Image 1 (spheres, one colour):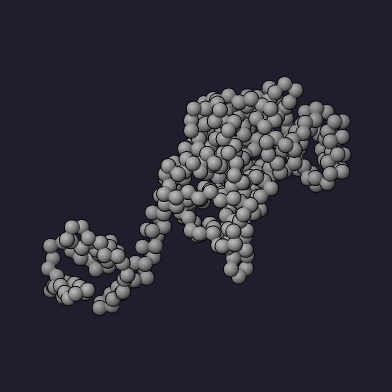
Image 2: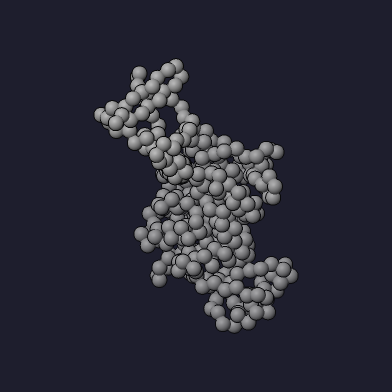
Length: 358
């Protein structure tokens, strides 16, 4: 089977591509920056000026800056490729924190109390009703960037004034004190393959590794794993890192990442995560390709309803087992040949006609 990984060329993508080579016949590594989308007449995904070739499996990934391009590519390829682990909607939903929280809300997945205001004026009125400290976030961004903390109404008001000058939308969220720690659940398919506890460095509230946090490999609690899997399913992402706060009232989902880095978590766990991803891709691709062939055969059978003396021309390769001819399963189903029955065979070079006797 043939696979491709389309990405920005990160180390994590390279590791995943190498792992996939152990399972797939061919694995092509394609730069996202060299793809273009064409709509209308001749619609398709083009790579270096030519329409992207056929693959049994395509793994698309990239940063939030490419969310719309990723969704466009996935949408155009969705019905052409047997298996893709991320749905087209995942690219825009997961790369936008507000949309992520809306989907979590729809699926009753627990998360910190979150607010969205239409304007800074409305947000300042909200500051009178909420408890401090609070978190303020830009809807887009990764690695803890665009996350701000306010421990009082006055500091929150100052941040709002700055945001108004930037003309940036923002989200306000309650701050849950977990002593600067959160956990990351790494989901592959229907399994949490690895867990990491992250702790913020002194004087920092963000536990992200890219923000200076430290990581420790852990076995996540069953309830936390259950919430992580539910979040990944809701977001329609088979490969997903889910960041969670473990609180006395239970786990709360902070956000998700569908292009998670492997370096940080791989340092603290003996599990080969890239291999786990590759194995899952191969198993799901096999299943999807098999189902596609079955569906095509059923469709062909439906189109070829034979009765009486009606016939149908079928083009197929001739296969032998020793000196015996092996008929394709489809022909056997249509002709309804029966073991032990007598058949008249009219034979000449390059031609064989088989008729049931009696």
